[in-house]
Image (tube, rainbow over all chains, first blue to last red; front, top):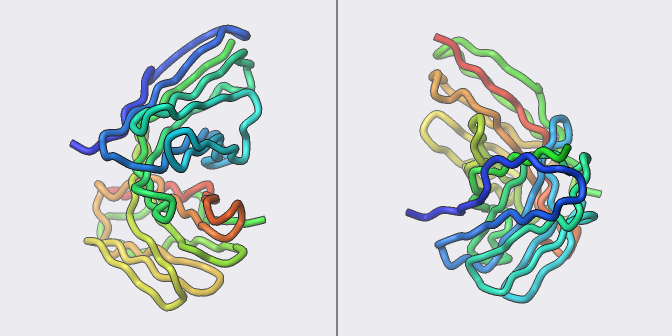
Length: 114
Length: 112
């Protein structure tokens, strides 16, 4: 089954404690991206990757890091989480850059930073 | 800066009562307008892509249309299982053509 898998799905952590949200896709997609979804603000892009070892900032990259060492994996790293990073996070992928708008989304990771 | 505005924010329909959701947009060089469905606790699910004014796409009870300034998602004879939040997004030339700008969605509830 084609899917984008995120872990953990739910996480409560404290300010400053580094965490990683993993994302893996099994569709051999080139393009992957991270979004956060907040009430009234919609989906906003954090980082994206057009292929292995190629990443770039989206609209709200501050406080986040990413890496793309393998085609299937695109982890999101919060080095020192703060309460304003409490949000619902989605990883998404598409076949290639030219299909950027036709995204497969993961189920989401709800993060609470105390 | 690309912008997407969806209306209404919420819509309550009776089963079988057809209606339309609106997505107004401003974009630098439209490279696609996209509709997604999002169920509670789930990630968005891709529905349609529209590329040029006059284009239409259909899927079951849903039909998406596009003009130069807005898109409509028409829902014909909706059923309770059509209840979801519908998101609209545009891709333009901003950010090298990579950037997707999403609206905040229309929350649709279809009642028996």
